[in-house]
Length: 145
Image (tube, rainbow, N blue to C red):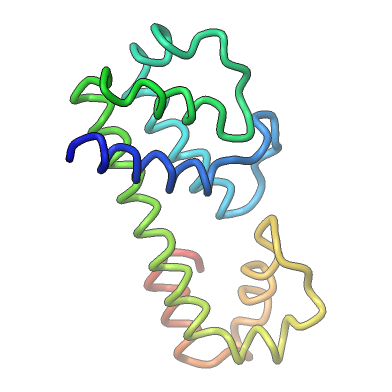
């Protein structure tokens, strides 16, 4: 059972953090992903040194290595993976809430803005006085104002 939970957590993190290792971090999503990577890197430092030292970072290869050694992970590493998955769950919840509350405002004020690197959030913030009170409250609630 322990390995199944670990594997599930690893796969969730791998899906979100599978971008290139040298990608420039710019927007809120990238900042969350970087925080997840740091949580795992710190909590699993011994495992990474012991089992994954020769693995080239990027495209989820490091997490695939941890997955391959799931039966050897320390409690600290498993906790780091669990913590990263909890952080990811909170970020997805915040994004879902924000999208729900600001969907109409995004269509109305930001339809010509390309998603990524925080551009939609910047657009909402630039048009804050024109956005709905629900959207402004969601921005405040999520800390993305």
